[in-house]
Length: 444
Image (tube, rainbow, N blue to C red; front, side, top):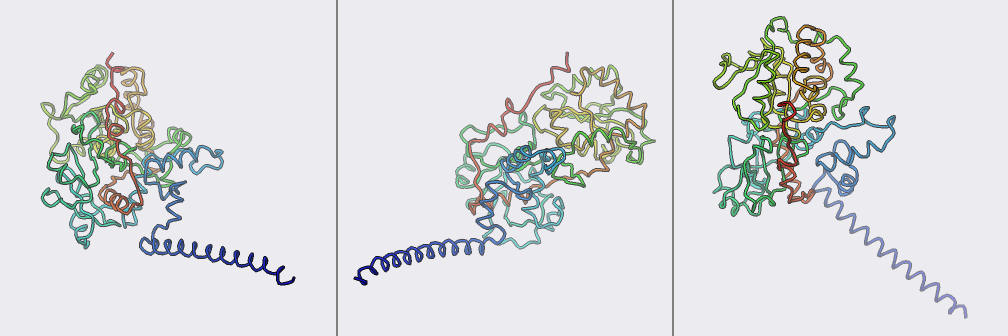
């Protein structure tokens, strides 16, 4: 009788032991895969990848969706618990983090010459990237990259290319040879002036390098890097205090020599946003000296640097009014040489979120061009009010973010299946009807 009673207990113990053994084998396999993965990629583990896809940390914001996720999470928090006092992350935060992830420099925007980059030993196994125009791609802004890539502009050498960067529609030969490559579209022009791409090829692009901050890889002309919390947008409270402070110590050293009011350097007089007509209307109230084709000749040497010694204001008028389209006219030609930019191109919100705070005058802030002219004359007479447009220098500095390491890093992550990007996004990144507007308001 005792033996019969013991048999069920023995059976239960056996079943439990078998289940325990299966449980152990299962987790041993999982651990082996995890160990193998982390041995191959010591920087990122499977658990970290899963975490980044659910809610990225500030140092993992690489994709547009990442920034959207953390921004939405920020807005859910009560104001006292938010990371940014403004409650808004800097729209070009992804430029900072992409550089940090894909370079080996201690400073995100440190630049290196071609020779310095070519000193790196690039193995033949490194991904090959085909670029359709050597002069168009900013080779001189290469960095020492965390990931290594090879580059060719010769189609006959591109049969095994992992990626292809096109600045215009590929030819039939390019499309055939590079049909297995990752396709990227690169343009520094506005959507209204980008090269046309054949409809048959548009859906093959998965990476976009444009001046729009929402691009896969924002190829922006400039960025404002705050000294304190560069990941955050500077809010209204700080901007209001800046307007009240005496910023004369930040005026350009040659301020007393500035004896002219407004300069404009222009080559294309037939821009889509009718900027020529806007300037003609504005000249009714304020003097504007126009330099360029069939106009005043630029001073010898660095034209804008010389103009910065003479003029207080500069017309940083873009050729198109498109979302996020802020070019070298703002960052290099005006702010970079000590002139206050008067701007049109992106929306007032674009400039608010991307440009240095209180550094520019957007014509959209004024009901009429006459009111804008009155304000310019007021600043010309009031040095303290004018100096407020240079107070941003106490809060941060301008950077010119290169893109080579970022495109190389994206290629590596796609090839290793750590990242996937959607296709069928061409219209979203390039369609003028979705991204651009007109200037009729200032022409009436």
